[in-house]
Amino acid sequence: MKRIGTLVLGILFLLMSQLAFAQGKVHLKESGRSAGSVSAIDLNGITYVDVQATARKLGARVELFATSKQAKITSKGFFAILTGSLDEIIVNGKHVRVSGPIEIRGGKLMAPVEVFLLPSFQQAINKLVEFKDNTLIIERRFNVELAETVLNAKDNLLVFNVQKAFKFTTEQTSPHTALVTLKDVVIKRDAYEKLRTDYISTVEIRQSRNDVQLRVILGEKAKAWSFTQEGAQFVFRAGAVKAAPVLPATTPSITGPVASAITADKPISLVPSVSEEEDENVLSSTAENAGSLTEEAPAEQPLSEEPSAPAVADQDDDEFEEMILGEQGTPATPAPAPAPVATGPVIKAEPHPLAIKAHPKIRIVVDPGHGGKDPGAVRSKYREKDWNLAVGKELTRLLEKGGFEVKITRSTDVFIALSERSRIANNFKADLFVSVHVNSSKDTRANGFQVYFRSEKATDREAAATAALENEAMQYEEVHYNFVDALLQSMAKNEYINESSKLAGYVKNSVYQQPGIGIAIAQKNAIRQANFYVLKGVQSPAILVEMGFISSPKDRAKLAQSSVQKKMAQGIYNGIVNYAKKEGWMK
Image 1 (tube, rainbow, N blue to C red):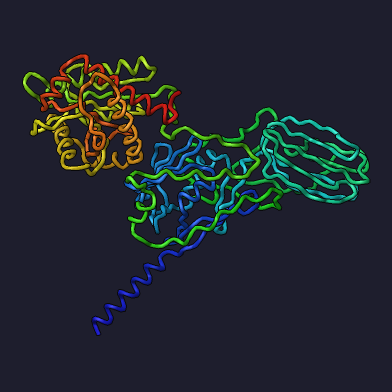
Image 2 (image 1 turned 60 degrees about the horizontal axis):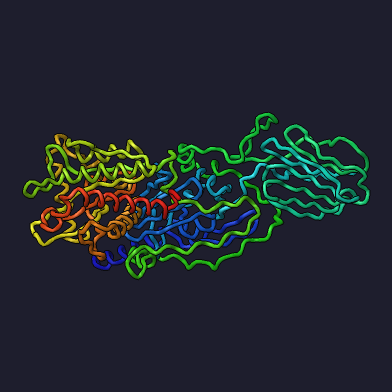
């Protein structure tokens, strides 16, 4: 009986765990029309949506990375990093806590829907987004709305709420056609409506580039029409005689984040600035901060609906990796989503999210490894720290000449702690970090150029040994490295691991193509991963270059030559430039 009871309890536990989330879909409605749906789950009362599908439908770019189980969402002036099992996301370089951890279900990365309600995300996609009744309601980021149609016995009124001052022109293009052009504004929705009254037959409102055109076909009894400002509203009037519009005692007005007082001499901007604090606030009160968007009768053509995604299953995380890994084991870049059919402002393709910087020049930190009381690897009269400094200074010179803003961690033979090097890079707000080193091994046959990027897990034993060798510099530090801080910092910079691997590839290829170096480069394993402390705290793409092996007689003979050191610096420089150009950082 005891065993049966235990079995029953186990079955109930499994059933309850399966009921902890419900599979389904979240619908999207743009400008009143269906825009399809995305896979969703309800997990402990929180609605989760498929990150990749939702971001694409909202017009943002998204990349998935299997190794780190992450998604990167990018749009104009916006990038966010979502990491599986973490309830913190990184938004434009800052940590924002969400209501639940990022989940992986059936090969899909799922995130709380509130991620897509962030004010900075809405600003980036130039749309307003609200989640209501299991539907993401999407509107243009508008500043003019047709709020009310008033049909009186003596006249008809079209009442517009506006959110900024603007200029307009009026024209009668035919005996029965009135045309009003509102300059430099955005209408909430295009519309076409047949009123068929004595004063107004049809109304057509269309966004035309930066202007809004109001075209009214007048009714048979319309003898006069006007378009005038009445307080904070504008009114189109058509009637039997010329007269001033008489508005109802209570006219509905628009509500939401774009509604504010109107003054002719101080119009509000179409896309207001959004602070990081607002992003944090929206997560605690998503409905209020998203705004209240009414669903009016639409006149636009619906967006084409994509086939519904299959229901999400609770499967192993391995399926996520299998889905997004290419044949060679590298993250596969998702195909771009089709452009949505919309008449609003078009958002151009953006440069890489890491290229969005507050400073005009690309900032690079060059870090010559070791120094002072820490000689690095030593063979005979040669010391690693000297070669690192020589190449680091030459690389700095080349970068400065090339128009980069550069900071070198040391320009003389001084000791700098590993943690201090990453602090220098972060205080400098570096966009790239390049640490220059020379390798060493007990096996004198080991040779060749290698370039590393940080990973908790080393590529192989040799990579782990290289990291251990470089990490020995910690023994010279008077203040022990704070491993708690290191862990937090590594969480903060996971989004840069994939970019670091790209940078490593460009540097390896450029050094390989640079003539006159004479140091072997194994094409299959010259790019490696290991847990280097000097890279761990850097909040930007970061690589560690091992120029060769000081323990190899052949490599040592080459690296001892100043001409080879300069060519090595040139090769590294070329790799940085190629990476920057490829990622859209520079022409």
